[in-house]
Image 1 (spheres, chains in turn blue, yellow):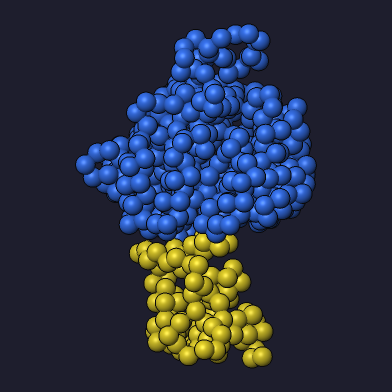
Image 2 (image 1 turned 90 degrees about the vertical axis):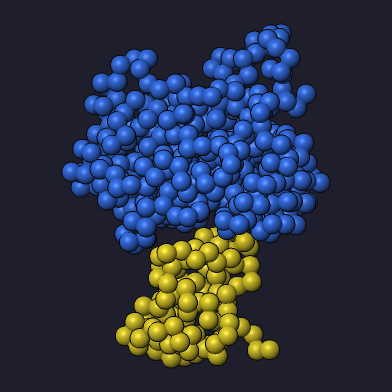
Length: 387
Length: 98
């Protein structure tokens, strides 16, 4: 990637290269690190017609594909209708799912379309490691979905893994699972966003694990996808393949289930809220004219980091990771591989970090403590959306 | 095989076209390319390269497309490498005789 192209991207484009669209906050799982604090559906979620108008806008802006997530997007009753509508309007769909709705019939349908790609999420290569984060039974559900996709002849679907302290040692095992199902492994960085903010201290990789991850990525090259999320590791040596910059509000953004537009999927907080697609100018106006995005596209100072010899590679790291750990946005990444984040982290007063909002966690069960048998939901709407 | 082709693996004297599964979005720096089949994204880093790529299907050879876009002989090896990269990822493909 040439510096001039990176400079162009930092100034922003007239339309995102791709965007993340979370269709619902409803989810049958309650992963401890959920970026969007999902669980319960929000009554204000976009209607089917609003979703279709938004897809029309994506088509006009020539956004090639959208990454659909949630919550668990497939629990929306109009999910397949929206997928079909998007692909008919030349907007490709990659959707992330825990696999709960991937039946043999659906798998056959997915295998037949060039314009739909699917990502099955697991966060451990064994049920033990996975279910500790994603909940009991979630590993079995995901593996069953993979079996259905492979049996239907779906090639190159993605297996998506968030890297934690407990699964970095399983990298080769994840790769073996992907190979077994003719799938492609995609690993991404744990962000301290949403419920992830509460578990980040216990789950984020240790410094020696970051080094092992970098070496593994260098060894496995472009065969493994990363969502370009590990660019901060480039400071170990050579930059990793992909776009090595923060694309928030410049080349990517997030549309949440109620139509709010945030700078990136890891920054669901009012400070990074650019507007709502229900406004008169729609998504296009938010993308092109919001004050927040204009600011993100203006030249950044880089603060103390500009003096670092690795600044050209890591560019100060991840904005959301800094924000939710209480670090200055022009300071180092909390996981700076040179250790520059540590003194900053040590100086953050307990309880002073920003609280992720909004929170759609189901309150009927704790996110951090295993479910106690027999405990009833506090309110009707706290029950599983699949029930 | 010409020495040029050996160097980059790209035949400038062949007839080429944008793959039918590829969408092109012009940008001020050049263009974004997306292949719906392979789900890969690519960048055309200059407007001149975009112009040349868009001329491929109506040009007898890739060399003619480059020349009609104003690519000079001195610049041709750079553009040939760029086309080789696009061919390697299936963004452009050889045209079969019709």
